[in-house]
Amino acid sequence: MIAIVARQRQEESLLGSVLDIAADRAVEIILWVVYAYLGLISLIIPITVIIRGSLTDSIREAGYDRGQTAHALMTTAWGRWLVAGRPLRAAYGIVKAIAFVLLAATLALQSAASPWVEPVWALAQVASWISLVLCIVRGVPVLFEARAWDRKK
Image (tube, rainbow, N blue to C red):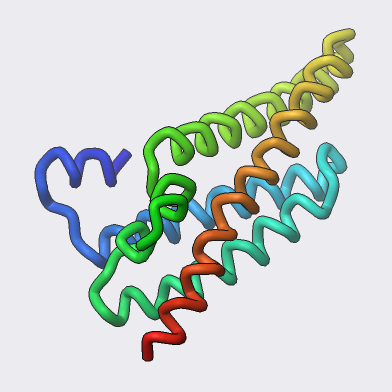
């Protein structure tokens, strides 16, 4: 939300983009870890999200040193579409939000002993795994393009 306001007011900064990504990543990791701890999702989901985030954020650090934002580092058309393109960024965010809401709803329904627990949990599983696939797909271009940055040195 803060990033949207900053863009509208034309007050974007490199530090702001880094902090925005870091805050988003922290919330996302905490939610995935908590849901795995509670047994609602497979442990492979938070492990993969953490590894992917660590790799891509470390690689992006090289771009920050050159004054470039994370999305500005994408130089290929497919990289820009997968990583920086609004449609895929929005889809990834929406699927994650759906997964988190359905997982929270599963917890609430469990405590209420509702018959809706299983169908809601099943939908949460689908959304969680789709989110994981999108997480990986959006990380691949960062890894591939990093090889090109390394060769240019």
